[in-house]
Image (tube, rainbow, N blue to C red):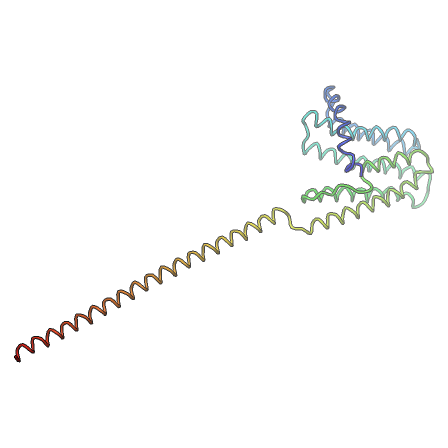
Length: 265
């Protein structure tokens, strides 16, 4: 939700910071790697029960994740490899933090409640996978109630007090599941239409077929017209030759009668 509505505003605010960090010699990969380290520290703080310290470390993790993109843009090092590295470390960071929460729940809430963080991790991974798969197919699958920024905010609220942790996890599970269902419905609806390239190929094939049909018709018409012309010429020649032979035969018979008449006279 935040990524779709306020991404441009956030980019304008973090752009100058990214340029400053780039001038100091800090690269985007360094920020991504140190963000993963701070996520691991957050998991350790949560697992050991230091929830307030975990809030500060979680904030540091989110700050690293927020600034690595602007630094990459400022340095002109945005690449497929960097985007892949950032995406993978985000998934690992999610697993570490939710694993730390599960460790904490083992100590404070015995029973099956320890499975709750793993359920959140499962639907979170599904949301991320849906976006990655849809984008590989040329379909945008951004948006939803619970993206990564919203999850980080809710986790910060959950770490304010031990009594907040379990209710917030249930809220995260429900909202993330709704996000996954919404993305699935969106991609399913958009995937019903043929791909633009397929449409262009179909239109091009139809146009070529119509052009070939028109050329075939014109060629057939010209062939038929030529054949008719040649037939008429031959017919006229035949008629002319027949008329000539008939006229010559008549002249011959008339000449014969005249000669016969002179001899009798």
